[in-house]
Image 1 (cartoon, rainbow, N blue to C red):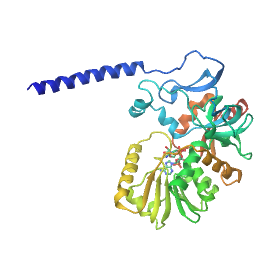
Image 2: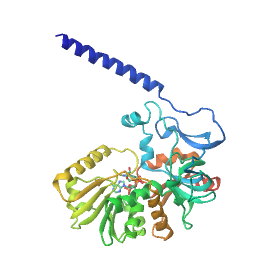
Image 3: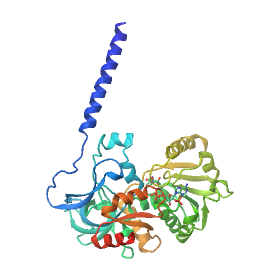
Length: 378
Ligand SMILES: NC(=O)c1ccc[n+]([C@@H]2O[C@H](COP(=O)([O-])OP(=O)(O)OC[C@H]3O[C@@H](n4cnc5c(N)ncnc54)[C@H](OP(=O)(O)O)[C@@H]3O)[C@@H](O)[C@H]2O)c1
């Protein structure tokens, strides 16, 4: 009897303490938005509140590079589905990113620009170099990036194109090469071929000597064909899992088919690379696609010799260099859907989040490129 009472009171105490802790944690969760700028100011996008509307143009302190970093004057940056997920304010996102307000206020990952200064341990890059890569807070006039996450820009592409490369092209390269083990002559199907990752994946698969089938909707058929796809499947007219074709690699940006459907179109030793759950944003049905990906990973362990692999792309300097060489050789050209000036970053994100981008959505940062981007929508 005593034990029962003890357990009851313990549970009640834990509940009350948990509730009070949550209230304190929630109401003290804050960020440094609107704090006075210490040092030299620069213009940047800050995420002060959760949601795309929380993006605001602000004066923040210009960053100083550490010994292993370069200071880049940003010319262009691009957006990725992950940018939207990070500021959506979902329950899980808030647990990691700040309960009431986003702790991390800097926004954007991909960048291209010109190096203004380098840290004392930087050996391969110097002031004046035109570079691209990834960092944190790239929607800003300046960003500090690790030397290991930046490479020189090929001379035959623009800053706007270079600013598209980061996450999307690394995902396409690592997904096809490291996880799909792509080889010349492979029969590769790319589901979701017209978005940021897909437009890179089609070109990279071709550059590796594969026979490429690309899945997209009617309005993107010509775009995807122009990128080199050998066969284009319009998903509004037919289901790619209902053909007799068998693939070495199914590079799946969408995840809108069951485990068995995907298995059926793979060769006995084929690989399904689980890349994503469709275009950016959170539309109905996405939760089901996440569950589908997780169960496919589990089922593949005991049901088949065919491989199902999931992965998160990582920034590696060597891979950025591979992408640079592919662009320099003219084998890969980033596809830009729309360009927005820095102050219209919220509009840029809202457009991306519709999930229908054709290639990449770019944010231009330097004044000349910004003027061109503004003129586009006037
Ligand atoms: N694993 C990783 O490390 C990693 C890294 C980056 C991205 N991702 C994920 O990969 C996915 C693609 O990213 P992204 O940057 O390419 O996104 P995105 O640019 O927003 O993709 C938009 C494209 O998706 C196409 N699409 C939407 N529904 C489709 C369907 N049912 N079938 C075929 N195409 C469809 C759209 O074409 P239509 O308008 O013609 O339908 C549009 O062109 C996302 O889910 C993203 O979260 C994963």
